[in-house]
Length: 184
Image (tube, rainbow, N blue to C red; front, side):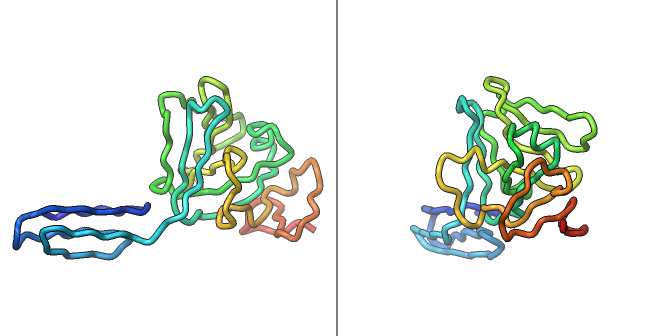
């Protein structure tokens, strides 16, 4: 019985099947063909970033390596996050899982091309839906309950020309996006 699909998170497969039958499974872009009465396969562990809103009505998981991590200083992110800048990890849509989707509302701020997602119950900023522009969801790391693993910590500042506070760190600072000029 063929099974196919991409499994971005750790899996443990336990499969009972008739003698001489075969299981074909694609995991992390590798194909396994297995034949036995009992098969076990454990894949390598994959990192996961987990966050939730204030009331717990909405949560998300960013699975695997992020596409990019950053601190955003644009006025839209500052207003959405209620802070001088917002730290975020951006993931391809297939690597993001939202829980409590019935509690999510979207809002497209004036002057923006990408909607923001909020919890309907507590109004916490949940994510930026930048799929149409950049092909990612940007997940604010401020929603994480635990220490953020190094792989998800911001590695650059973007829209630094819109900053309201100067930041003294060694990370690259871009006037707008990383494909443009750096801040002085």
